Image 1 (cartoon, one colour):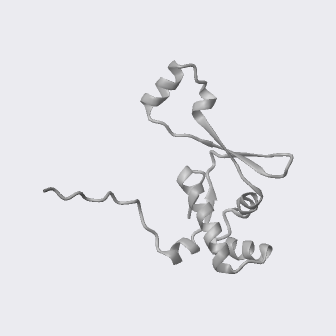
Image 2 (cartoon, rainbow, N blue to C red):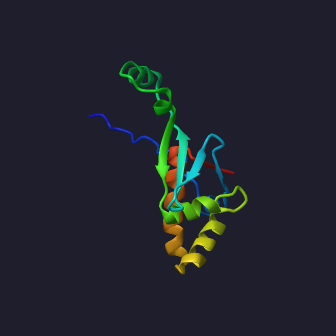
Length: 127
């Protein structure tokens, strides 16, 4: 019987290191503000070449291939505006907790989950 190895899940970052990192917006990302005040983010989508040719074959446009949209809710918009390339994740959490009168740990869970999702989509990176 053969044992199966689990695939590594990417680089694991220590909690303290993650909280001290500074999130930065991808320069290829553009944003617009909706009438509601919420932000709509346009970010580049990466596709394998064979998928790109398949989409083109079935009438997909270049814009559909290049950009995806992500509409942020009120709290997501607030965190997005706090990502300025100067504040650390910890500072963003502190500000978010203060603004919403939350426990720091509660704010940490919400903010880090949101930042992690933006990172997975390639919308932000970290320094």
